[in-house]
Image (cartoon, rainbow, N blue to C red):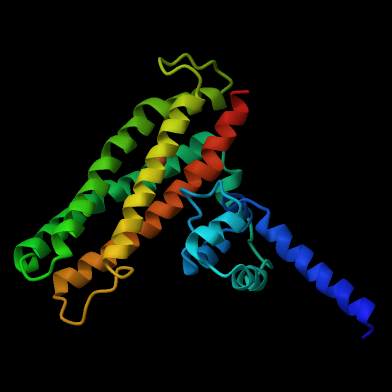
Length: 247
Ligand SMILES: [Fe+2]
Ligand SMILES: [Fe+2]
């Protein structure tokens, strides 16, 4: 291969890497939901932080951009690549979010609090991380409960009206106001989860952990995965489409 060809191939490769890095994380997941697995693997926030460019998100997560781009390139794009939720009418997407993800938080949130408080009673005195851990779990769940209520009672009905071509005359002014408020609350939930990751070595129970401790961390990992999917549907799909309808 001539050096000119080699350098043009190198340039093409760099350009393609850059084209990944210059795109928003949330948009990449909307295009192919399996990219969410790549982002999770590298600790990149694709839901609360979905509005960030991939280059910025990699820097924030301390992830090597070359490795992330390579993983994205190797994630298959052959079949069923697009997030089907992107094609649902907004009213159906809201029904799905409420019946699946809101229901999940209402079922699992109290259980998480119960497990973490049991850990405090059994091991809180010997292990310094358990009391702050239980406090963060409680804060996460207790912040999410009114968040669900605000979406169900205020924002989602307004988006349903918009999707039917009706005017929205809420006490909140423009619909961007409640959307911004909900996005802010998503970011707060993401920040609590980040603290929980740090406190628990990414939800890894120590060798001496009892069964409740192990079940609690496993449930929290599942809870986080569900919350990521939930916030992705709202922040990257539902809210941007509602803002377009409101224009
Ligand atoms: Fe929600
Ligand atoms: Fe939400």
